Structure formats: structure tokens, C-alpha cells
Amino acid sequence: MDRRVWRKNVTLALALLGILILGAMLMYGHANASPLADPTPTPTPMHYGGGFFLPDGRSGTVQWAERGGPPQDVRIASAEDYEQTIVELTNQRRAEHGLPPLKVCSLLTTAARGHSQDMSTMDSPWHTGSDGSTPCQRMEAAGYDYDYCGENIAWGFISPEAAMDFWYNETPPNDWHRRNLLNPDYREFGVGYYYSTERFHHYYTQDFGRRDDVYPVVIEREAVETSSRQVNLYVYGTGWANEMMLSNSAGFSGASWEPFTAEKQWTLSCDNGTKTVYAKIRNATSTVRGPVSDTITLAASDPYHLAVSNSEATFLYGQDTGQLIPPELRITISNTGVGCSLPWQAEGTVKSGDWLVYSPLLGDSGAILTVQASGFDTTTAGIHHGIITITAPTAPNSPLTIPVQVVVAEHIYPAFLPLITRNY
Image (cartoon, rainbow, N blue to C red; front, top):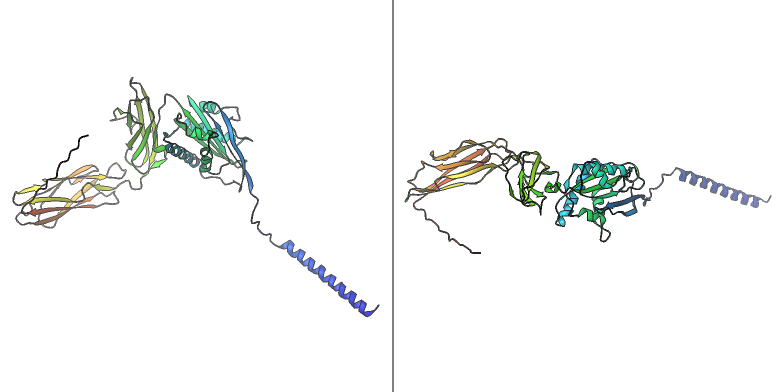
């Protein structure tokens, strides 16, 4: 063979061998490389939907949609928190439309919770229960003797806010859930939430109702807790009641009938804890409905806060008349926290002499401290200074000091203010 041809063939063979080796290396390297993360992962389809059941018996599915989103497999901490969020959002929406708050009824809550759990077993969640029951039948089975009933359901929404938005943000004429939320004929409702690891994961039910002979009282739109003893009540009975009676005790101790008003500011009993307000109403024929009640937790961060009605005490003495103005000062010592009792003691000091007179030396919240000035030097014009210190061991802001002064002057000039009257 010609040497040049042989060299050419060898060169070609080596080149082919090199290509094969390089290809093998690339294949090996690709097989062992870490896969790159997909910058746009395919979302897991999730189903969202809801249904309505109106008091006239109409029902329907408003929406069944597929939306992209991550797998919803996270268990929430508390189903009660989800339910309470829907309770408060419902009454917030009603207030925005000038409607009274709905009272949470434990019987309706039982029915709603049962149906939410039942829906988790259905291929297609619906108002008809797995046993064939209707919403009103389930309420009746829970012990609720209804005269008016309705229901909202939803599934797939990962938060109670999202479920509420789904119900509320509807536009006429297809606003069936919204009509239930804003129906002025309801008085009570219950909310049930159930979480399942299967299918749609989140199931919500609202059961609405009215019992014609039950007129609820609602504290702060059914909020769980308050930090103030001063709360707002809503008392049902408009158009029927002429009078009402409210009390912090089941026996209505010390309570009396007063003119009926649906909205009322009320003072809860003192000290932190669960508080109950009782109510009953009476019409023109002396027919009484009630008593009914509602509860709220009073949780103040500062149950004891010492307060005085006067930040200082000043007396004026005229040398020409020998008159002390005023003859005495009365200072109310109180607890502006939520605690029932705030014992205190008073101690007075003066820079010179012994002219500061006060009583009592010990007291409790709401008591009045009487302060007088007697035995001070009246011959020389000037100012006598003293201090009363109020100490209440259980109040974090204790003690409080009240400066006391007696101004001695040759003459005190009275000032007269005009009296202005207006006829309407």
C-alpha cells in the first residue's frame, strides 16, 4: 500500500476514534448531571366552587372552576379560627349595608359543621346531604326549630377570606350567596369548616335561620374578645318590643324595664374573663320574650389602672374677708381598668406647718377623698405647698401624686361670667 494512503487512513481512523471517545464522555457527563429546576412548574389544577340554598327553596351551583395553584396539602391549626373569621367578616359586611349582626347559634353551628364534613365525602359537594337531607332538615335535626332558613357552601378555597370574597363579590342577578349574607330576615347563623387531605381539602358551610319567637342579643358583632368593659349591643325586637331589660346577671338583679332601643352601649361586669349579657323584651300587651344571652371574653392588658378626678388641688384665701375658696375639694379615686376592686391609701405632706386635712386615709375604687386646708399662716401673703400621694399596690401606674396649694392674697377679686340662654 502506498505510504501516503496508509498515513491518510490512519489519520482518519484516529479522528473517528476521537469523535467516539468525546461522544461517550458527553453522554456520561449528561447522564450524571443534576437536572435544572423548571423555572415555570406546571401548576396543580384545583377545583373551586360554591352553592346556595335560599329560603324559598331555590338552590344552585354558581361556579365550578379550575384554577392553577400549588397542591393544598397544609393542615390549618384551628378550624374554629376559620369559622370565627367568617362569622366576623359576615357581620362586618352586614354592618356596611346597615344590617344588624347575626347571632351565632350553637345548633346551627352543629348543622353547618356536620354538612362540611359530609361534603368531604362527596364527588360533587352539594346542599343535599349524603343521606338525602336538605339544609333545613339538617337544622331541624340539630334541634333548631326554624321559621326561615338558608345555606351557603363553598369548597377548595384555602382561606376563609377567599371563601367570603367568593360569596360576597357576586353581581346581580347571579348574586345568590350575597343575598343570603345580606338577608335582613335572618337573625341567627352558624358556620362550619372541615379540612380533608383528599379532593378539595377545604369545605365551608353557612347555615342561616330565624325563629319567630326568639329575639337575640349580640355583643360587638360576635367578636371573640374585647379589651374594654364598654361594648356595643344589638337587641332584636324592632317593630315588636316597647321595652327591654338588660343585665350582667342571669337573675336580672337590680335591672329594670327601659324603653326599647336596638342599639345600646353597655358596661360589662368587672375583671377579665368570660362575660355574659342577658336581655329580655316586652311589647305593648306585656308579652315577654326571652331571656336570651350572648358572651364575650374580656381580656384587658391592664386590669388595674389608678386614676384621680383632679390632677391638682388649689385653695384661695382672702385676707380681707377671711374666706377660703372653696371650703373643701372632693377627689374621686377610681380604677379605669377592668378590675373590680382597687384598694388605695392616701398620705399627705406639707413643706411647713400642719394644715393639710384629708379623709379617708384608706379606700377602694370609686371612693371620694375630701381635702381641706386649715391652720395655715394667714398673716403673710404667699403660697403654701403640699402633696397628697395615692398608693394602690395592684396598679402598675401607682403611686399618683396630687399637688395641693393654698394661695393667700390680700384680696380675692371675683369674676362673673355672662349667662347665655337660647330659645328653640
